[in-house]
Length: 311
Image (cartoon, rainbow, N blue to C red; front, side, top):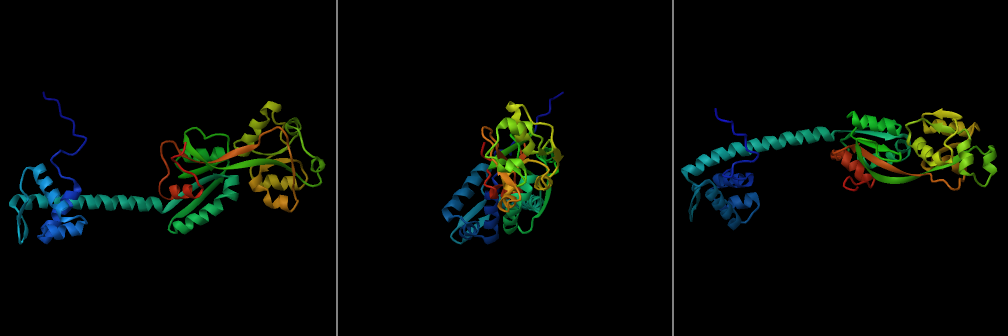
């Protein structure tokens, strides 16, 4: 019993390329190699050479050439008929691929951690709207852990996170840097101090974001060598709620500097320096590992100055 021969991974070597077939169809329409060359945008000598190469490849003459023009041979007429079917199939393939791209480009699902969603994404999305007015954008805001889960579940096309590293299963690139700052209400005793030690910050109950947020992750890591965070005074799931609690005088909080511009300018909150602790962090765009952003997701990424080709 004979063993089946596996199909070739490439076209047989005697099958001409698509460009040569398009040129042959143009010659058949015009009866002239020169006019066919102009239609496909190449010189007449290049067109003549391409047809001769096609004839050598197939092993048959395709054209009868004369001063009055070029006429298909019987073999040429048959090959032209086959070529027409191949070109039509290629055009249908291209139209189908374009339809898929149009469907992909008609929507963009973004998942972003709270600080980026509130203070950076609005500007980027306005710029994206100008570049892609036909793309509908949906935004899912949550903490960095929730963003990673949405991307891994296929519920978002592009994500933005604030943690210490790229979540497992994702690729990403740094798009900005941010700094966490300690703030209190003007009535709080810390408002009149010149600064704090890391130990004082670690040992004081704070108003904190929940576990899973990038802000909490960075703060936990920064204070781990100073005894770790004390039990939270309050644990809240949004930046707005944390700021509101601090403004009321409930206690100190640690938030992104991006989120505090208005409150610091109006002195509703006061910044308290902390020496000897690093509270800077990287903001990242992320996407499922091995699947670089395309279409609107790639365009949005470019607006953040992120580049998926960067390590």
